[in-house]
Length: 283
Ligand code: KIV
Image (tube, rainbow, N blue to C red):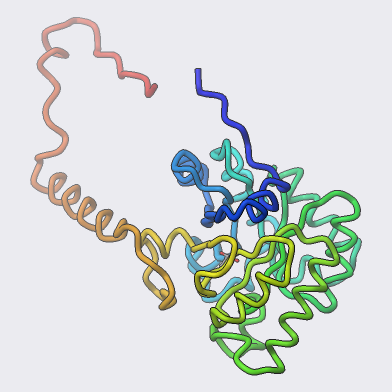
């Protein structure tokens, strides 16, 4: 009988900020990985639209669709027991109209089983955020480097580097908080700007490439575990080298198969008995 665990809920993140406890978040895209990260005590699992780059082999997150996000969200929520699972709303699924944003967010909750959604940017998006929050859909914001705007931004580069853009970022953060977001991801901005935003908001900030002063941290799990090396931002800390572990294991397997070392012979019992050996069920 699996041990009962108390699932983390949206208000628990605000409580963590109040108590000065840091929030640990990672991205996840499938049930097996989600279950492992969950067992290790992760607070938030984000089904990021980084899915497009690290899982599906796209160059950017722009081609990711709502169907893809719903499919992978379902897998992650099957694997997670304690962590709060949040899904990214993909490009152009929340900008067209408030009613479309609601319909699409509801799909991620109903089909994907997630507890909250994340949207990038502020400005025209704030109206939709307010409506989603008003009808009971928890929304996480995302400012700074917003990868869905990579073409407009001219690449994945640090944001909020001059007074004007810092002032805009602070105003956007305040507008999102006012619209009801329960947490705000700050991506790729100077540490001191992240500090300023974090001190001005009551809601927790979760940084990625935004220094140590945020209320929590998030990394793309495939970067953190060394599974994806096409493009690894300089702020990423590598906690494992699973890519080379898998590469070495696969080379060993290929070698074993080619040389006949695997599988070992199991024919002795079969030939001794008149009954064919039963294949043991996976438990
Ligand atoms: O899609 C994603 O993985 C994200 C994180 C970088 C925060 O949005």
